[in-house]
Length: 306
Image (cartoon, rainbow, N blue to C red; front, top):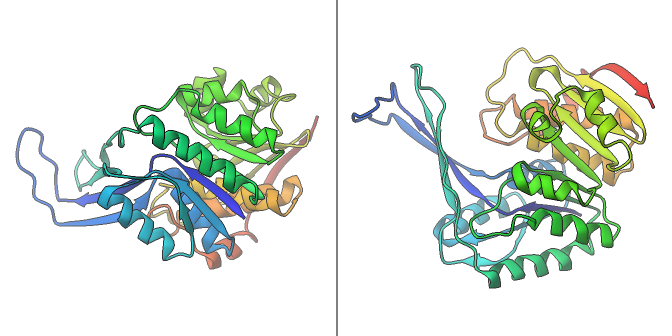
């Protein structure tokens, strides 16, 4: 079983209009809602590929009920505290002018100490049967800065492989606990390590972290694992949306860890998962047949032994 941790789920809402006018009225032409939050994307990808998934989140109000329904439709078991306050809704304004992809992001509900403790208790109960744990994304309000550090520490105490995909102070404090694996993008690497050079990053944490996945958009994946590093990529003729691709890639890494794959296979699976998300209009979602096709097209550019 894959345990996907998504502390701050979101109803990702795309607002379509011809143009977005500042300080004026703008008229919608259409609207579409998706189940969002990085951990939800991870869970959806793993479930699509046939994996049993438990999804741990704070489920808030009516939006939480809707999010839970969308995930349960895909066979995902949703666990975690139910809140009175709604989960966040995040808006992306899609236009035909220069204001395309303007984002408005909510912070998420305010979490009580009681509900936070329930979340931690649920995490402890479910990691016992988990093969791999994926922790992804931001936290809602009133959460300790070391929340991910606490989850990492618990996973290590139980000898459970885990991948952390986060940013800011949560990631900084979690790194002090030396997580099993991390996934970062170019921007996050510069914030955390003052460099986006893969080898420089690998050298900084070579004795502390088992798996490091650095994604750099169309330039692919740099992966360090078992004292080896590899660079893979795949060429796509058309991209509908890259939103959620990193999350799908993380899901691929978790599947590879579960199946004890070697570094080349792990990188191929992860790259195919991430790229498959780009081929569909559904936000943060991949399809199995796309992954199977892309697996044959992954380019292994370099392998380095340390």
